[in-house]
Picture 1 (cartoon, helix red, strand yellow):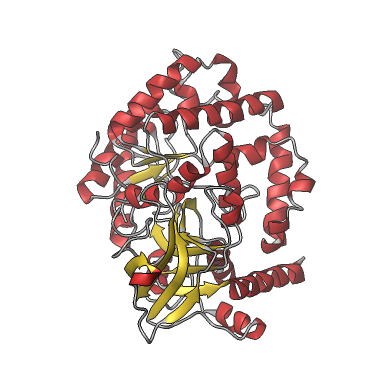
Picture 2 (cartoon, helix red, strand yellow):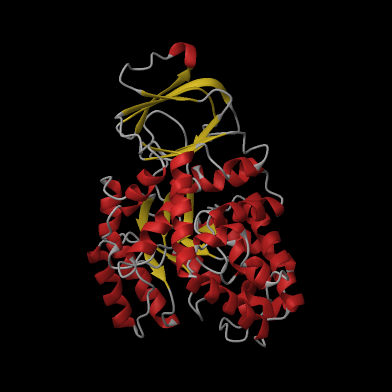
Length: 460
């Protein structure tokens, strides 16, 4: 296993949301230093089990006690949250998300709240902005409401080896926690890997054109996102260059040898490289559903009209591309589902991500659509939930920090009305969300959503 494959590492805006929410509801996020979820059933997510009638005590943003309710003495100064008949689980992680830059402060604020309202308490923010390290710090300090951010560099674009090496060093100095791979030349990829290794900086995302799956795995790429280059690998004797592979490999779908899937899985497991599949990125574009119907999905009211128009135009334009054939796209979707199931069953590590906001993926909401798609591959609801809770903590190299409910973990929690192991839909509308110990009840989250929708409606 490559040393990098084992892990991924762990503004300037005003909190106008707080003012909007205060106008809509009287409550504000609970600021008590101690919070107790009393009489709740706990899904610790360390394994497939449910602990009935437990009390979970949080102090200063950290879980300090998890035990049967009869054994817990709730501190007198604690804010008590009644969990009777409800389920407490770890917050969800979006491992391929995006947050706008400082030039769009309202969009930054709205995006962060959309994630929180859907139970997303950590975002691996791929393709970063120079403002994001400062934003990460302000979120962690409690100055800005939002999920914990893992900050990637801006899209790597160097045109030669020297430029790529200089970019990597500059992004490291600026506070990036990983390198987001983009469109660098194939001959610069080894130098990028060596430079990143020397700096202790993982690289993740796409596999650049001409590099190929095998070379990326051997170099220790931390994660492959979108199942990039797997289709090309499944084509026997295919050239590495992807110029004729089409849209995510759809042009080569008739040349795929499914018997090579086992070899792809074996190589991925040996490398220890994570996959962040983002099924929804491809499935939304491949869908035969009319774009006019998709843009009418309920969550679309939380996106600006300009973004909705861009998505509508993109889907129409993709449908007209010579390398986009509906039948081939449908087979591509089926192959990607088969590949994800094989990777999971073969022991290759998988982390949840949807690539939002992108192509009909509204931040937060898209993660729940992604989980439904993952279940459709044959994963159980529990297995899907693992990819969004425990696995991201492992992927980031911090398995003891979050992702499970245990003493010492960061208090990123979702309170639900039902057990999502029985139906993933139970995770879609949380009773409340706790992010780093700050509690957001459903009424306040809904007030935030209403404010975002109203703001976007005014701009239509």
